[in-house]
Length: 108
Length: 114
Image 1: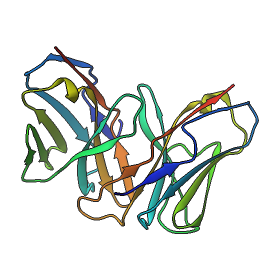
Image 2: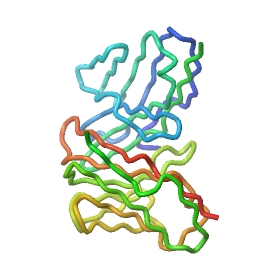
Image 3: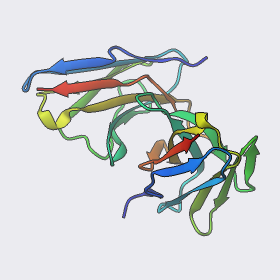
């Protein structure tokens, strides 16, 4: 079993749609959690950290369920510019473990 | 702004060559990482370093070595390049791990071994 698993994707959605990404992790000692965004042929960049209480940044909402070892990302009112690959990232000790990513295409 | 710089965006090397990929960060970060990214496999950790002259193997260290002689520089070495090492290589750095620590990435080096 992989340490971090994500929805396989790709997700093709129309502009304005709401889309949710799911992620599960296997290491219960994980300390910090993140969503990164990676555009085609670019490096990953931090989208948002994920906190136990859940957190929101504009159209983006992240949730963490430590008991279920589950992380989610919700994007509301999706824009063409949201098209990218979304990476779930889990940190424990000195290590960052990346999920395989879920590709999102927002269509006009 | 944190800057992580990789020495090359694109490299083409021949099988059997020794290849050096260089990474420099300007934020005095303790931790530095080398990943490779392949379609369908995501980012896989090759090596990481949490201090000068310290290194730890990641998930796929075979065929690679690293060097960290200075805090700002972390080098990845392919001792004898093979075609299965054709990939995108990404370097990252972070401050000492704490809640919410962010990993900053270089722009990536796309290596092709022919």
